[in-house]
Image 1 (cartoon, rainbow, N blue to C red):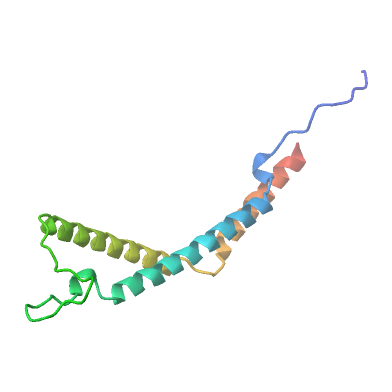
Image 2 (tube, rainbow, N blue to C red):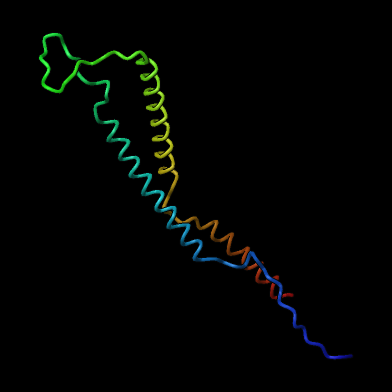
Length: 132
């Protein structure tokens, strides 16, 4: 029997490799998204609280206009603009609801069951790797 040396590279177990930096960057990105969602939610609530363009007082016949003010002209596409404004407001409300629902779902608690499952899988891979 001749002695031999195995100079081949060991097998690579891709699932055993843990990329902590990538996980950290992903966590930071998710935190930044949550912050931006909160800012957007605040802005949307401020906009909803303010008076809209349609809430302005109409100019009556007895009101004197100041220099630089002009009479409102009626637009031919006023109905379509109102419909477009209503559509945009509905979309904004839907976005607001989605943001609020996503904030309700996100929880700062740690899911121990998934951590235990991941650790048992890692232990199984380690055991398989040690048997080879």
